[in-house]
Length: 267
Ligand SMILES: O=P(O)(O)OC[C@H]1O[C@@H](O)[C@H](O)[C@@H](O)[C@@H]1O
Image (cartoon, rainbow, N blue to C red; front, side, top):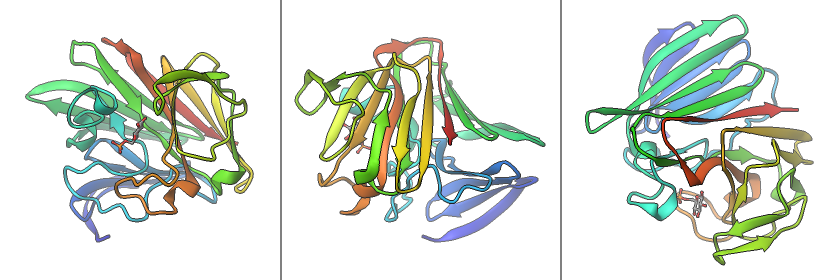
């Protein structure tokens, strides 16, 4: 990947180019973050002192304009998966604008705005402190689906459990509601939609000896996805071993003029 400095924006915040894609890199006492302007897509978040990134990013990601990025937190909007074309909506492959930023001693915040066909259709605000919070707002004036399609990095999927999810989920692979184990372990291709009723989801990662807590705000659904050996674009054969997607979503009950958010904490 070719990384080129473009310009300085503010203290600790600069714009770079990764191959075709403009990327904001932010460094602050509370941690660091990288966000692509295509998709307002958080690629990387490392709280201060963390040994590993909280987010997984494919090591073979080509950073091609107009092509969805494999990893980080793509914003799927205004539809989920194949409810329309392109898959997961246009937001993740459109250029957003950094419309405001604030830097404080114990946090920093970036707001991105998406204009589509001359209309402001969405904003996404990211606040980084000891935690990371993303708040997405639908401004289309119409109902829409949204998923904050978060790819979390784990040391080893075989030594990872998902805690605090319900014992039943809609299996997108069989198209049936099914009973599922609690805690959830992943040993095959998994593509499930849970109801977001049980509070925060926890990724218990024995290899990295950390828990990632995912607090879903105004969500209706939680999608859990790992393709395992299924061929997946821009993902290497071994990619599935170090990632798990836990997505904060509103799929079955779309949002109108509302916000949906996620707070991510590492313990
Ligand atoms: O390859 P894409 O378009 O990024 O989608 C990846 C996956 O995203 C998940 O959210 C869906 O539940 C899966 O069905 C889908 O395969």
